[in-house]
Image (cartoon, rainbow, N blue to C red; front, side, top):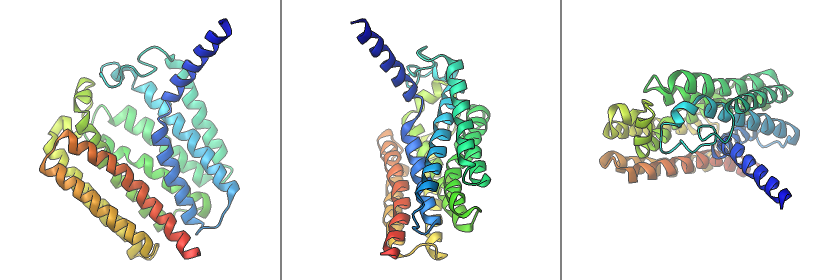
Length: 297
């Protein structure tokens, strides 16, 4: 009985630490990084390099997520949505979370340097932008927080290309631009849904500062720019008809969702836009992967 209680206590503690990892975001970043690596290698399988990229990217993303929880622990305690998170709820000691985050990011840089220093630099840059630029500096100060913070996700794409090419090509920059342009509409839609939580924490997200209607218009503007940028990869010859088909179909669908949101800036349409935005990004990078596969077939 005592052993069962000890095991149950350890399991709860493990769940609390896992809750700090933000696994859905980590999975999305790993997906775009690995697809970028496959794209850069033109489908050539290099399991060892992919494994190192996966390990380095996963450790850096998890470490940065933990540090985000650590630095946000005070404002997390103010919001109904976040006050039950492990650190503000007192289930994980702040200093333990801080050191774990630092150690994981450091391990990520060491591991990814086995590929090349440019890959390690991009992985470090992604973690620093998310933790220092977005979380510590901009999140509480500027309505542009998520616009500039979106560069963190772009670094995952650049790291994927650098892992295979050892440099930064135009294709890498254009693919990274997709993630950069995708981030604001994704998180602004989320902020419309959870506007009250951001107000409670005094975080100047766009809908809090300028209202839902203006946020919806800017979401639409960024979506149009995003779809246009996605077509550049076809226009410049980096991908073929398979990618173009995916980019056009999902781009039009994303625009349609955000036209609805702009016409009726409600939580319902914001939530639908937010959910579809994740599907859109996965589809675009899956389209890149499918294009490579069809060319090799």
